[in-house]
Image 1 (cartoon, rainbow, N blue to C red):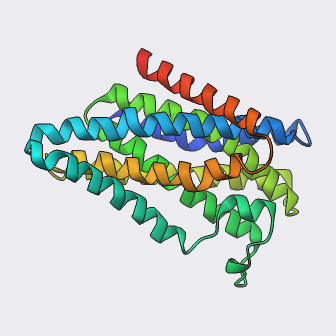
Image 2: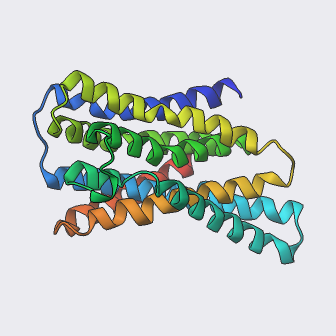
Length: 254
């Protein structure tokens, strides 16, 4: 991996811990503020999944496959990525459910703090995969814009995770450390994503679309439903629009 790719993936992974730092200075944040932050994350990821992964995947597919195969291969890879995360997700609970209340499906002699950290780590895996694939595509500007986008969206998530851990009785130091560690799965996933694009010329569009599918799962099944069920739709929408415009600007300038 290039030095830019290594630095970009590390920044993206460490940003979850960076987002958790405010717990040392403020005891609580309003639900409205957290909704805006998580909406911002969702908006960034939604745009990034298309302009940095799915659409480039379609473009690369046209270069190496016939016109009749390009779209089916991209769409099939996207669905496979979505299904892959669904399959893995069955073994771990939804992190927002764990933070806000009990999840009866996962009460198997494992502490809720441990489950929260594991669930967030799983949540971060497709994001790291996407960053690695972005750099592995050979377009460093695309990888860099993805890394910046993921870093920005990880910050409010890190804050939510830290508060969730505090509510379970963790100390501030432990909550910060766990939020930080949960993000470090991203550099590991990024290495997998990066080298998956180098298997052969034909693997790049598949890897890009697969990563896009994994990110769509996180957005559609975990983030958006959580945002729009709490009665703060206006704040959530403001956050989503802010995230969308920010990611469009990042893509434009990078």
